[in-house]
Length: 283
Image: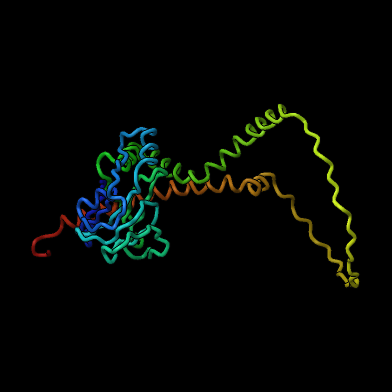
């Protein structure tokens, strides 16, 4: 089981726990999951791509639990990239779905980023303009991602940018590989025999068409101004909007991620100064 944690100066210890029904049921027999008899293994920072794919296909469904100061707030039936409210009504008879569509961004909530293999990569505490990053568990895929990003400012920008480009990668692949695939298909078609298909003729039918009255409306003679010719680059942008729009989104995601990291570090430093300035009398 993975446990992501953040010590908030007001709300206390916030935890996001990821595991399988078997892990949670071992701690709480009333856990509502229905796959407690199926063991699972989470990928680690050292797991190669082949092993990660195998775990993704063989593992049971990952579950998630959110706690504040040890009290359960939410229990989810899956791990997904979403914005989720921090506080809730506690344990229920069924697991929630991490949709997060109606999450109020002005109130305390969590923003999760999950990989394509259902691996939790990052967790952020958010409340209004406040953004603070959780500490990933040691040896997890999230810890590996953070260590890679902390190695340089360039990687901290490029990694979120690449993640933002992920949804538009198919469009870039079509643009680059499309001509190659087209030629390959044309080459294969050359080996197929020529078949003469029968010449099917449909019966001719004359249907009555009503004769509508003609209207001759006076049209004003207006001389429209001559518009400048549209440049080639503008026509290219219009034609390939599905290509460059994801690229722009990826760049924006990378810049915003770098800005949020700096805001997170500033907020954590402010929390530490606040805690250091406390005295027994003020507590």
